[in-house]
Image (tube, rainbow, N blue to C red):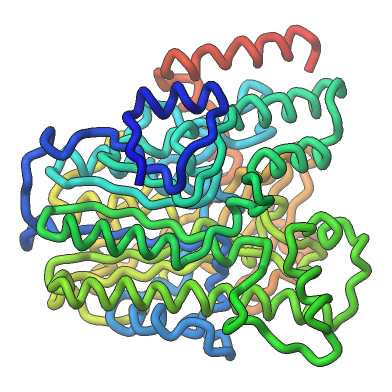
Length: 511
């Protein structure tokens, strides 16, 4: 495994250099840190995240198919939050919120916000404090093993990590420039349509063999994780592991591949291929059996990654880490399969995209295994892990620690906000208990749902329950204005501040 200093990596990235795989960025030398051990007040912390994993496709969340025996085991041994809400329906803003406990529009990473000054570049500002930075201050050795291109270090997620391993990275590109050009082109009309621009981005993400980094297998990720644990398990550590298998394309290995009557192997290959644009646009002319096959392929990916989650759990037991390690499992977002007419993710704010799993298993004796019905949020995760590590998170954090819920304490209701659509007109949501409002700040259109009576969000009550719609809209608009004020007031790094020139140029042109 080739190790690059941060300076070497950034130099290579700027030049578009072909990089060895996996790439492990050694941000801080081992000798730079004292070797502390985990104890009762500072347990090891592992954050397992699985890309595009819907909560309702896990057996422990009520899915009728046996997709997740190892995740089910984790849920049975820990605290399972039944109503965890993602902050955004795609990776970059969702993880920006999870790692900072701030909302995308506060961070400036939420596309097409109102007003125009919220135009974003896809980079987490270095002046924002991350979960890894806070844990490192508590004496933790910090390591990440990631896959999704949006988690590449040039997007800012390596902040606070002593080591940052990108599995199967094949090329370095300036993705920030590609996406910013796409965004400006959409606003000005002087660039190719978004679909073509995004296809160009995907081509940039391909390696010489045409294998996309979206399809990095869980076996490769797990091998990196187990090797790191073997070498570092005696240190006090924070380890973030991100699996990408349930993200499209859906192409599970043969042992996890479904058999669907009336769907040939060749058709399965097509439906699970990287040509998802045909499916998204409707050019594929899907039959009911085709849609069933796509969902089955997705479930196969879940079963596959679940197998490797089991390997991680077994290695923790073998290394004697069960008694001093807190493990959290969640997802950045879910995946839509035509429940509201759409496919994939990033373009809507329905529960198939926002309802994510959240399971926290502490060291033995830390808490009693149970389920929690209270709504909880992505922004609550970082404050929770920091408090468990003996610290407090930064004053800008918007989440609240889940520690009272882990110890069967108070279940004070939490209001969940979500935003951050991908290269499309922005919408916002507010969820207060079972009431959920989806609001379009451009058109003023509202959708109100009673999630207890209508969990699939099929019956819009906005026109019939004007009082609830008005109340939630007022709360949502106040939250939005507060976010915009915070974004304007926060100090920004030199790079982020320079992005203002792009905004000024667009505004001077009347946009």
